[in-house]
Length: 347
Image (cartoon, rainbow, N blue to C red; front, top):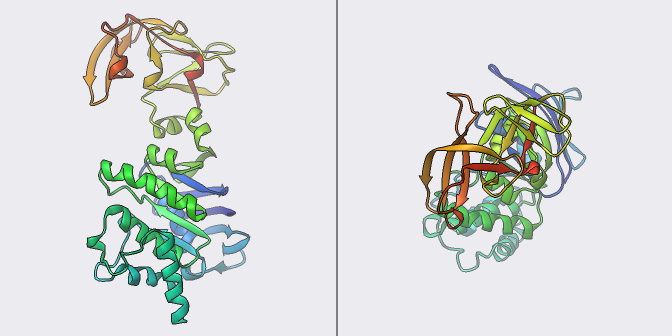
C-alpha cells in the first residue's frame, strides 16, 4: 500500500496539519484523545473534506484541493471497522456480510463472494446466526468480512477494541493480528493504547494537537520515542526535566543527580525518561542512594515509589516496578539504571 496524506483542516480552534506516508502492513496512529487521529481517518475516507492538500492511495488521487478533486466515500475503496462493529442486529451473518457488496448487481457473484469470505474468515456454520448469538471474536470476524468482501485497498480501524473489557480485548488483539496478517490487507489503525499499537502495528505515526510528531518502526519507536509525548504514549512512568551536562551526560535538577546516558546528548535536550522496570539494586551505573516513600502491591508485580536522597522537596517520586518473584527480601538502599535505558527527549 502507498498512502500519501498532506492536508490541513480547521475545526473551530483545532487545526489538523498533517503529512504522512505509509508503508506496507499495519500503520498505527497513536495519540491522546483530541490529537487528530480520527479526523485524519475521516479525511482519508471522504467523510470530512480537508481545507487544502492532497490524498493519494496507491497512486490514485482521492483528494486534491488545487485540482478540485474530491472523490465521494463510496469511490475511495477504503473499508471502515467501527468501534462497536456496527452489525445489523436483525440480519444474519450472511446478510450482514452481503451489505459489503451493495454495488455488485449479479446475484450469483454476490453469493459466491459471501461464501468465499465466510470460509476464509472461519465463519462456516454461522451463516444463519444473528449478532447476539455470536462471541466477541465471531462478531469481529463478521465485521471484517463485511469490509473485506468489497475488496478495499485500505482498511481503517478506529479504536476497534476500545469498548471491550480487558479479558476479551486480550483475546481479540491476537485474533485481529492473525486476520490482518492472513488476509494480506494493509491497514491504518487509530488507537490511544500503547499495547494495541505495539502488538498490531509494524509502523507508528504519533500525533499531538493536530500534528505529526514522528513516524517509524514500532519497536524502534518504543526503544527511543524521542519526545515527551512519545515517551508518555509508550508508557514511560518517569519523565523529568533535564539538561545537557556533558558529551554523554545529563543533569536532572529535580533529582539532583547527573546521569551517564552512554550516547551523545543533543543541545536541545529538554527531558529524560526512564521506564519503571529498568531500575535495579545490583546495577552499578548511575547508582545513587534512595529512600522509599510508598509500596504498592499489584496482582503480579510491585510498584515502589522512591526519592533520591538529593531530590528536591515537592518533586514527584520516581517509579520502580518489579515482578513479585523478583522482589528482594529487603529493598536496596541504592538504585542504578544502565545508560542505554535512559531515554533522551527533545522539544
